[in-house]
Amino acid sequence: MRKVFIPALLDNFVSNRVNVICGIALLMLAMTFETISFSQEIDLTVYNQNLGLVKDRREIKLDKGVQRIEFTDVAAQIDPTSVHFKSLSYPNKCSVLEQNFEYDLISREKLLQKYIGKEIELERRFGKDGEKKEIIKGALLSTSGGLTIKSGDKILVNPSGEISLSKLPEGLILKPTLLWLLENEISGEHKIEVDYLTNGINWNADYVIVSDKDDKNLDLTGWVTIDNKSGASYKDAKLKLIAGDIHRASPPGVMRNGMMYETKAKRAPQPQFEEKAFFEYHLYTLQRRTTVRDNETKQIEFVSASAVPVKKLYIYDGAAQKFYGYNQWSRADRNYGVQSNKKVYVMLDFKNSKENNLGIPLPKGKMRVYKEDSDKSLEFIGEDFIEHTPKDENVRIYLGDAFDIVGERVQTDFKNGDDFADESFKITVRNHKEEPIEVRVVEKLYRWSNWKITQKSQDYEKKDARTIEYKLKVAKDSESVLTYTVHYWWD
Image 1 (cartoon, rainbow, N blue to C red):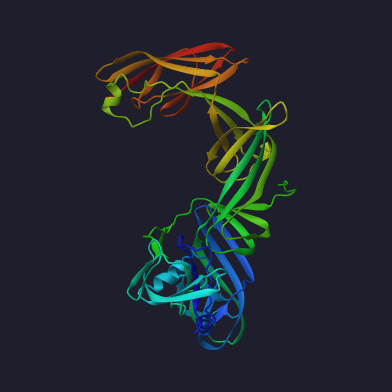
Image 2 (image 1 turned 90 degrees about the horizontal axis):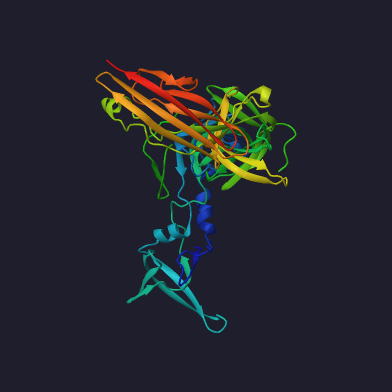
């Protein structure tokens, strides 16, 4: 019987090399199954919820009757309950009677764990050139923090040398494998397809935006970023991406391998992805095949647009107050909603329309914005996340707070009675820039659902049931003031 040799280091239990020699044991294991390897064709659909759908087509020679089949090179994070097998050559003539998913892979730690309480050999070399050697036999007591071996009446702690195991323990395999018991009615070559879901593979969109010197137009490039940690590589795959929030059932996690997995360059001359609506989601199909390797992050350009009209917005939301719902204390508390925020937000706003050289559904992702300096170099000016954005909808990106613009919000009066409250505010915006600006002043009316603006220094726009917005013009190196009074009432 061949032996399994593992080098052991005196100061480092986790050795950086494992030499496994167990040809006879592996041969005996392989003889019990017909192995299907070497995928002929792979289709890979990736969802932006850490989920992938794999369609794996292979060819195999099958005998007539019941037989055992070993299907290797599947994803380590496969959901075995999602596997669907079919013979494309002879539909309904070949079916799976039983399926096992084997995922207890060989590793140094697992090999040694299987030998706790059993005898192992330790070969140690010494002498000037290591020409002398010593064989120590003993029972492996522990692997925690290093090797502990009982040899005769001695206990050896972290001994150095090369460990020798007598055979490969049962239950350990070289790669994740589906083991099937197949019933087949027609012997010969079969082309089969195996579909399954796997966790550990995800995609997201990343956008690079370059704004022109006047912030009037921008160039946008969108990249698909695919992160594959599923435990398998997908060679020459037909790649599809699903954008949308699909619902998944969430049973308790499944324990595998001692870990808990939750059940949940140059610009392309033509678009590389074809987009279309699919059910209530959007599907992006790469117009060529690509290889997605395990533990790889791959980026592919999927959208490119130039000269997209954009607006730079200054927004002052002076009330640093969250809305907690209408209630009795919100009507009477003089200090409710008067906390002041001095920051003025800077945002870019553009419409995702065909007229603006876009007009395709934009998957959720991070938008990074750059601006060209006078020396033609690009400087980073901010980033923000967007949600899934359909065509003809506006995209608004928050970049940061304006350095030279300051807002101030002060409650100037408050009166209330048994069935009403009157509140007045003075809002000042100071502009220290060398050009005039327009600031959108957002006011949220928190106290009650019935309200009316009884006094105002300028007109406003009602945005929703409790929000109004003023457009305040401020001259260069100057300030502007607006005032208003709101009347609340209740029964």
